[in-house]
Image 1: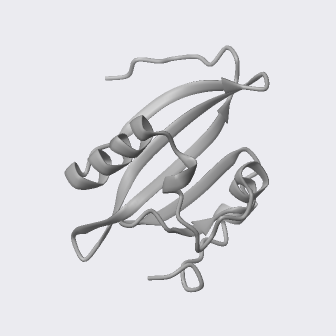
Image 2 (image 1 turned 90 degrees about the vertical axis):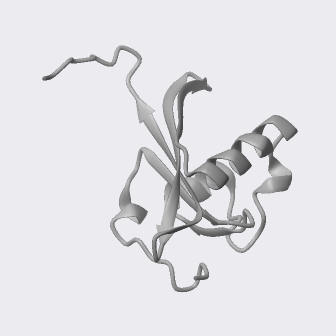
Length: 113
């Protein structure tokens, strides 16, 4: 699959959520509008050189073991939830997707059973 054929029309209209999808080689296949605003247009380019060695190891582990990586950050006064997970094609890991969602400073937490 390439970035020309990967489309997500609803994702392009999310104002506070950046979506980035990469293949197994780290080549960015899709970015929604918010991702392009935040990261620049890197579609068709490898995301690997933009990351530290530690981050590269995490990316490799996530794809090799079909794992999820989730954490929060604060950047320029905006808190974000970063959620990185493998995506699948024909039952096999095909790459990595990252959702970067802006979250409120005082976000409530509920326990539901």
